[in-house]
Length: 334
Image (tube, rainbow, N blue to C red; front, side, top):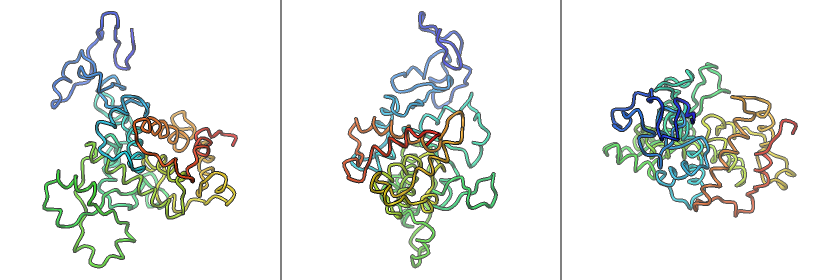
């Protein structure tokens, strides 16, 4: 017998021994067959929880995840920011169903506006908060040094408000203006020309892609302000894709590396400080879950996508795989 988390499967007879206890969904009739597996579509889905089909599994470089990205993420492969966005979704999409237990969240911390949904794991709070604005961490009320991320809601020309929402989400791919507060202050009569865009459903892959790309771009742009190299921006993207794990505010205040480290390792940010601090903390039994673990998972997705023709700027002289490899293998005694 094979244990599949919620019930046992008997491969000799090709059947489950018990019915699925998940109740199914009305808009997916096949989910009401409690004896089948992933609604009889194992080519396109997996079932990591034992209850409900999922488009992705935990391993970001798996054929399941990469096929999902190839079929659903509508981005040009020739742009490195698009590649980083696709890799980030490959890292996060397993959580779309993994944390559900018979239709309920296991961790109460994921309730309400701070719940993360969809293939990019985007919260309602991020989608409703203007771009780059601080989101308070409920555990530290009023403490600006703590956050639950920063807003991802951008602006559109007021004229676009007359279009249907499905048209607006297409326009959001190219005609959206993501201004930070200090940038808006410098634009005369801003409110006469721009309005906050509608809130898109982050469970939709197009919306999820837009939001994930914004989250990574927010971090990467802050990194550019610090004179970052391509190596820096790769690391920033790898850590920023995990929600508030690394924010653009963190990057604006991050310690710069010495000239010697810059010459040898091709990084302007002293990432060793961040990795050294995080590796001391054990979360869910993992050391360095916000640094080393994220960089490893992101890199595995990147390597799988490269094999499919997605571009990574490692042909640039300031991109250093050796430095990334050192951080991927960071140890407690370093």
